[in-house]
Image 1 (cartoon, rainbow, N blue to C red):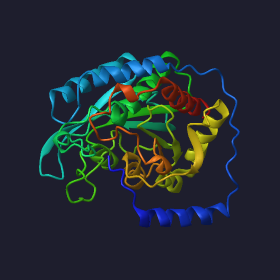
Image 2: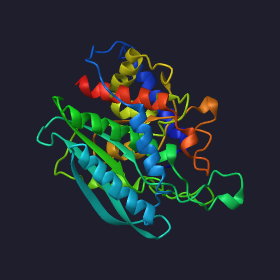
Image 3: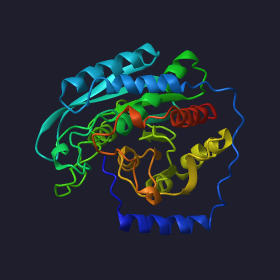
Image 4: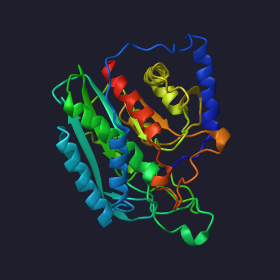
Length: 325
């Protein structure tokens, strides 16, 4: 994904946020009391490992096809109504790949809905590698890709066990998120997040809408730092505060930091701007610690970076938010 920081946009959003702070009181850290919520970090970890076992899930590869089949079958086994959205997508370098968005719905008859999403493809290049010989190798994507999908799979499993929510839930695994321009090429506008861009223009259901959306990206590393991403704060502050307040109430404040982070181009941007659904990004990014996790867009993005405590914090928080509706 394009995790570059756009300083001008950041400045504009900071000014916007400062102006809004004069109109709103600071968000409370309290949250609605909830029944006991089950979430298994062991299961989420296993689903991540099973994705990684296919190898790099780069568009058009056998690993990509096989993993897509696996995700489709698993979501069906969790009791969801599953469909696929397929299209041939031309990328920034003129290549065409078969895009495959996987959409799982719970209680599809309900009008009021919440959207959860992550990307499931892998980056074809390790463009952050210091060794030039390694840069043309595909990324395994344990954290950048599989972690968000694994947490959502465990949430899906829990929803399948007890469908007692007063709202419907849609879970989308977006494809072709990480095929954006590599670091050594000249930037091309909108070269990232192609699966979510396509879905935002062609949703799986006519006139689809949701109360809000939550993106999970890079949610698996030890001591992860989830701050307020500023596109999220700009477009979906209510959902942002809802999630962070719930995390605080559950005792996960060391992960969910109530403070402004960077401005990041990610799938949620297009769900906000093209689909009009207020959406937030739960993403491990901290400028004070150098930005993204150590193995980002390198050959080291493997299962060594996946920590069950972090998976538990994210999954338990998101599932609790659903049950607070």
